[in-house]
Image 1 (cartoon, protein in one colour):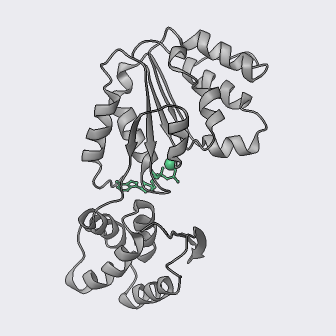
Image 2 (cartoon, protein in one colour):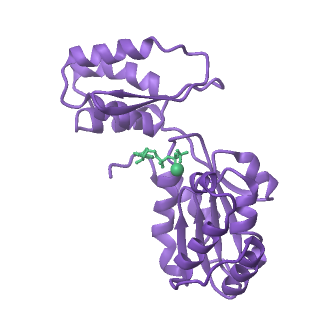
Image 3 (cartoon, helix red, strand yellow):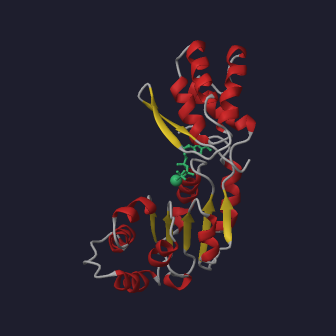
Length: 253
Ligand SMILES: Nc1ncnc2c1ncn2[C@@H]1O[C@H](COP(=O)(O)OP(=O)(O)OP(=O)(O)O)[C@@H](O)[C@H]1O
Ligand SMILES: [Mg+2]
């Protein structure tokens, strides 16, 4: 994977994680859609995972919660993944909570809950510090900073968008397979950078869709982007030559 500008973010996050400290820590990762929260968390996870007795990344918590009435199935999956054994049926949420505590309170756990969007997902799947053994780290990834506040998680890393140089590099890597555009594509590239506002997901998607296409095609895509109103928040997806295109608008800036 071609990653840009992750070094300093990883350093900051590592300071919060402080994997060699003996306390139990909940750490939040926040930031907008497609800014790179999951990517950063995985880098951090890979870097420290060998220090932990048991570990698990639980992705798509939001998505799974939508299709299920309770979190019982998620509790079960999480236990199976962490303990690497088949857990007997989790009877109900409360039983799952008690069982999770019982199994994990003496273990040094590294747990990532990715894409959390409801407070009860944290309460039911990760609960409190006393669920986990000394030195455990629980990473909660969410687009909604409020959830962390509500759960009293004060160690928090906000993933920032890429700066101009990083954005140009990422866009160029995908659109041109080189780390900087030649002169003739540089001006044109800037339109796409303006549009993407430093969001890796948009830079990648736009860049890849322009790869190996001529200036005429680039101009056409640029003109299409211009038609989209700038003042409202809108997350849209449409198909462009069978590539999914994502559009984001940020009313805050
Ligand atoms: N620093 C980076 N350099 C290059 N690509 C990146 C970087 N950060 C993220 N990406 C890419 O951008 C896309 C979105 O990243 P990611 O899934 O981590 O975002 P996210 O913040 O978790 O989004 P969501 O809120 O939808 O879960 C991915 O394809 C990822 O590979
Ligand atoms: Mg994510």
